[in-house]
Image 1 (cartoon, rainbow, N blue to C red):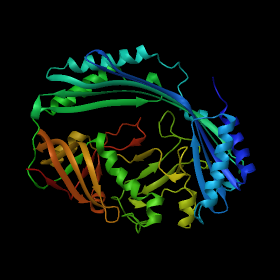
Image 2: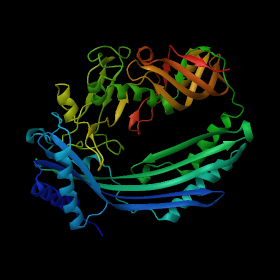
Image 3: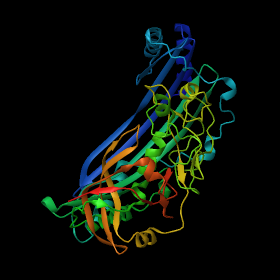
Image 4: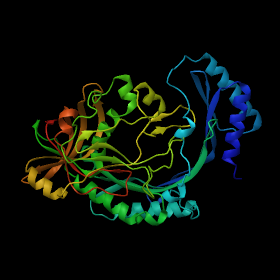
Length: 448
């Protein structure tokens, strides 16, 4: 049965006002998901989840509280409103909380233009199982693969509705299709593994399952015989599949919540150079068929394209209303929220300006160094930007891959590293974070 999320939201808003709230907002989500795993050609795990969850935030003066529930009967909704009001009365005052003013709200929403929902039928479990089985079979067909750790296919869809006592009431739908594979080569201490996976909004955009399995297997075979590199200072290239994690550290440091707390290594850098000249990081939440796109943010503000870094200069923090007020600025319409928590700032789709060279050309220019294809763990000092992460990949000699590398640690300082970035031209443009392979100087490798 399909429930009206707008009716649920309005019921909660009315109940909250009646219970004594000065203002309130409601996020209602109706979601479905199916995931299938196969192992040795047989069904290993199947999971299906569906249901509606509603989250209510109430404000009394400068106090706020949030409650959520997966039950949507009338008695539960009434109890939610009364409980939230009681909690808000006991909460500490926060001079920066509050809903958006009416003139800040998004109007004339065009969610359909973003094409975030595939209207084709939800795939049956046997269709997903067959896709996962094809993925596993393709990986096992590659010589040298000893087994497949996991082969999975999944589907998800959500209806989202946000309503507030300031008059905002809008919603949209999104869907996702995904397939992934983890393959293994070798045995015991010589075992190595790698993966490949893809996710799309539309089934028609998803690659063939056999291709996913083949790529996972080929990546794994390349890792056979991995060993630790020598300790020393060397140039490093972050492969496209992990490069976005490096840019993610910059995006986190430019998050308004971090800046407002004073715990950001970029806190004094607004308007200053943080990347080499010529490099831009642009946020565009309106890219069609992209998972991070959204027509409005978690507080009902219209989203828009904005430069985060332009010509190497840090141009903007990522802000929701509360953190914008703390910093004496305007929200960048980047509020994100779940049903059980208040809004907080978060970026949507971003793209780093690509360079002119291919990855192979960058490797030839590097000569000797490390190509990083996988990372584990993370130790980042949020105040200083000191950086340390476990890594694996390939040792490069004379511009060519010499052998696979594992069990090494990279260390440096993000402020210094960012100023040496040099991008390749290999970013996958269907991703929410479009970031190419990145060459970086100023890193120390701890190996054998």
